[in-house]
Length: 214
Image (cartoon, rainbow, N blue to C red):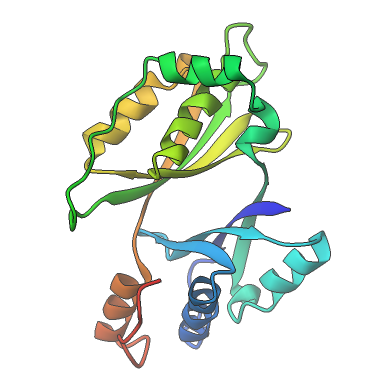
């Protein structure tokens, strides 16, 4: 069972809130390769894609977070793209012919920007809404190593962590997504644990900026 979890601290954050304990807690998931976790720029939140065996296991993961008493959680159950799209040759052919942005290869060492994109179909769902087409576009990006993408279970939408070279490239991807004008997008820039730890150390909220990027 995969979930997207966004944890968001209540404002104002108490002065003695265990911020460093929260940072360390989510860092361990990354280092141990138990989850995909990125700091969200600005809101002091994390975007986490985690695979658990049960709802009870997820509940324990969230409740063991040292900041749990001071945070709210937004939880999205996820489905694999292939579970919805299948593996048939006709699907693969449609993927190859979709009019989407053709991402150029990035040179070694080139920095890419990461964004969390949550796309949802407007309700009531219009007859022309092309959710499968939007998921097929994401599957191409995933196969090229440029996105981690899932369908939102039961909600007619998707979740994707997308890597792009600049904001215009992301805008191009979203404009060309077949969900088109029937979709509502929430887009969040993502940082790294290394950068976040450095900043928190500079302002005195953590003891050390030393962290190996996972």
